Image (cartoon, rainbow, N blue to C red; front, side, top):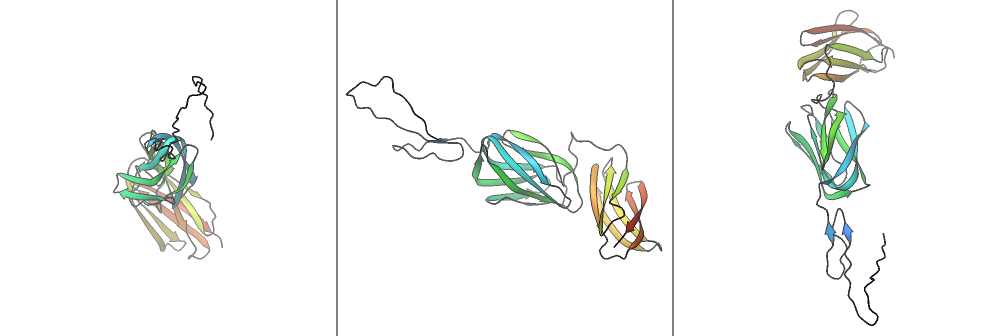
Length: 238
């Protein structure tokens, strides 16, 4: 970017000295006449944070900086056992169940989009919170339902697709935190798969079921969560 400045007080025959200072939002400005320029402090800015691919198990996000200079993204309310990967040039730290923090030494400036923020969990699916600079909000991912997100009022299960080959999904509505498991039986009543999902938070969860190692045929899946029990007919077609 170039700028032209006029000195309307200049007098013919006089010699004047001018200092040019380069301004960069996310780094030191170019040196001019010994002046190192100015910068905005990293973390002062606004951004959007968007879901790019949805799991489970893998979720990816991108951040677009709207104003200022950002070098830190924080995710909260995630499910226990969630792992994280960072964009190129960034690092990520998982602090127990308190926060997942992405940071970089080279901050992103207005107009830049950073991709490659990743979260992973085999079963969890809900809404949590993100924050960067002066921006924040809810985001879908391997996250329990946040305080402002929709919580189901009753238990429920949907299975899709069905028939399937070789994978289907259980969409489970849980109104309160409950120990949850899925038992799959063949037509002879034999247990062929037991999926202990642990204590799942209130919200909507999508659990994948793969039948690549099972023969074609009819199966029955029993979903148990707290006091709730529901049985569903599955058809595996290969």
